[in-house]
Length: 302
Image (cartoon, rainbow, N blue to C red; front, side):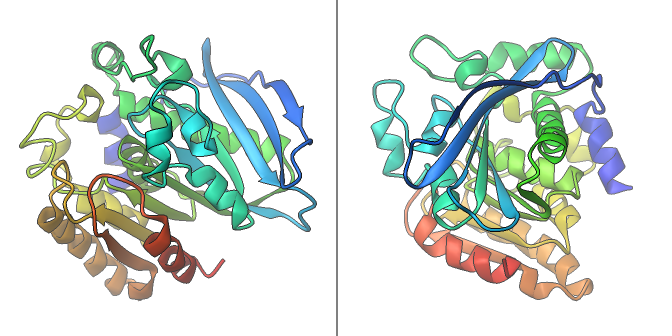
């Protein structure tokens, strides 16, 4: 019931269509991994650019990490690529998590989010979420709902066209705005079997209600039904590793702890208390690969 209500609040479902898959290129010249760059339509006329990167000479089907960047210059950051001045600084915050996943034996799917990167960023590469967010509201939908729709349709495309992927081992991860999409998408789509959102889970009141965040975070009526701990509870009993930074002013740590505790009660009631973990990094708003990956590995057992 909660999942159905969340979909309703987000303005889902959207308009279905044929995926119209187009492969831009395939690269096999790297000694460590192969790469497929492709686009598909998630609804009529709406293209979703993606990069599927996977280990070379892998044996058997691969687990898949769906990777969503936050409010940076685009999905290329996940792949440790510089496209705009200043991109190098994002690598200091461990935001190249698509390549981190590939080095651990996963296939990684970097998905460009609506209003970010190639999908509407400004000339300097910075995201441009405000107008698309308001346009979505005028249509009775939300940009977070649209981003979640794109993720679910991407899973459809992977299942249909990329047989090297183990559909029973799909996880999702992201930092900041990518972590936000990770929380919502995993709550909605149970085909996502595990999640690792970073610097995103916090109480609405203490975070986006108390200070101005990007317009894309605001969902009409959401607080009448849920707090973020409730969304995390919808992921139960699937493995969930929540990551926060102790000095992240945008997502105050005490509120984050409270929301994880809400979800933990549901996990424990389902006998899955060992499947939820809270990793608290020693800095601010960033990804924390060193402490987070071992905990995620333990939660999933993959």
